[in-house]
Image 1 (spheres, helix red, strand yellow):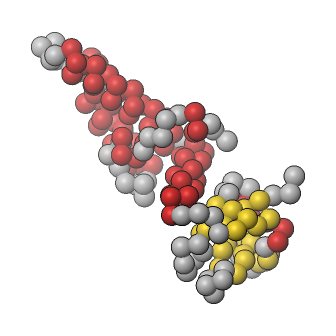
Image 2 (tube, helix red, strand yellow):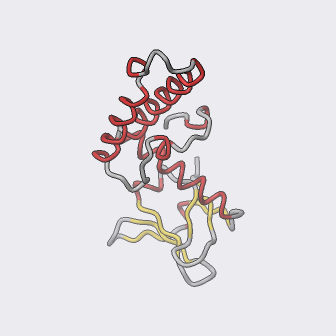
Length: 149
């Protein structure tokens, strides 16, 4: 997994002026528009030095955003990290559960666990290796997914 913890927490979608549900094609269009707008060679010679520095910084941020969101694998990792950050901000973790304690559902290849509210926590087999927090499908409770090592 890419070390997003080392990068200051930035909202790469807002840097590209895009919605998180935007397609890669839409993200690319936003990137191309912004990269041209802030490109150092496109800046007028009579612009104050501070403004030029701001444009160069924005140019670098737009390029960084595209490097993460323009690649399917790094975009997926970033989206998972954003989702987990959002879950952490919802409140404390209700319980810590080992994946092996969850029920396996052969029909949809997922693991699930009943929540005390009557809803359920569920995670696909693929996601189980990547996520650490799972929210209930009915209430705001969150569990932390652990793995035996």
